[in-house]
Length: 109
Image (cartoon, rainbow, N blue to C red):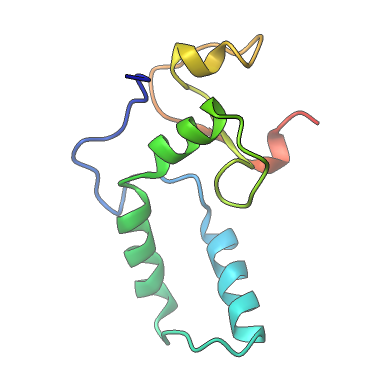
């Protein structure tokens, strides 16, 4: 319906819009709040990637489509190759052939 493309056979090695640095920072915040965490952060990252890759592209596309308020790890970044229905809200952006993300640091103010 909204033509938001997504990888049909994604694996945890495919790129996601969340960086490892952001993931580790979130774990550090949770640890500082005394939230019990798994010991193996490397495996936790792989597990997170494996789940996020399944919905990452659709989440970012929908967040932009509905003009969701800015929130970490969703509407604070945008797809460079969003579908045309989303692109109409962003003047001057053009479609690219593959999924790429603009992290919060590269978004226009």
